Image (cartoon, rainbow, N blue to C red; front, top):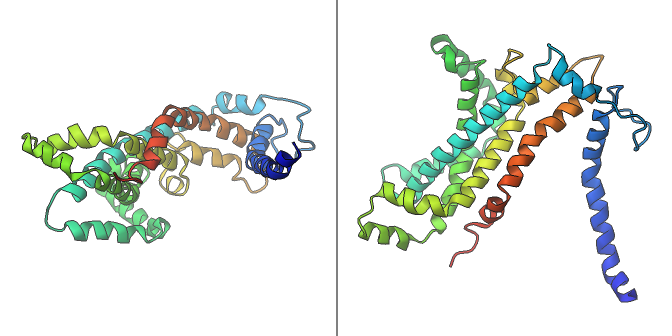
Length: 283
């Protein structure tokens, strides 16, 4: 027993400290959501009074379209995630397996673009989408469709490179065998690549969904109308005041908004483990 304590006690102590360190902010958010004062000044770590006023405010106030914010975030994140998988998978297969003019230059250009922070392009994107609004109001500045196009343009490079690395790990003999059997490149893509790439496609879909759902800067710049905002932009109004901030409602909205992400994460957990290790070992 003494030997076990000497060898393992410090490991368990360190693990417990790290868990407490990681879960403490989440505990404060949950505690603040039940705080009726709407502040972060907590007198104790054990709640003396539990109130659901902050949650009621999100659904009862006509000035706070919380459900519309969540719906907008789900729609935008879902469209971006699905489109990223469809476009990224097709592009990765083309760059990895097909031969065409400009292939090497195109993949190098994607890598070069990813070297620059996307925030540097905000002013240029804003001006471009403002001009687009003048002749195509449906996809211009201030529209959800325009925001989706911006998100897709910013995420394509990373997704294509991630998926291309997985496609490169698939033995080329499978393609040759399919070609001998008379399969076209399109049939090879749907019948061989897609079934094998299901785990990594699930990872790309999940990462795109979470990144888009939580994104704030671009959405705050593009979406102006209150009912058309995403949940990240909408909740910012609770803490954006100069002299008054309702952290309780902000915490309550954050907890409710995280529920869809947790459900999707747990649903795709089986694919995530396989997708993160896909392509790491060849054999």
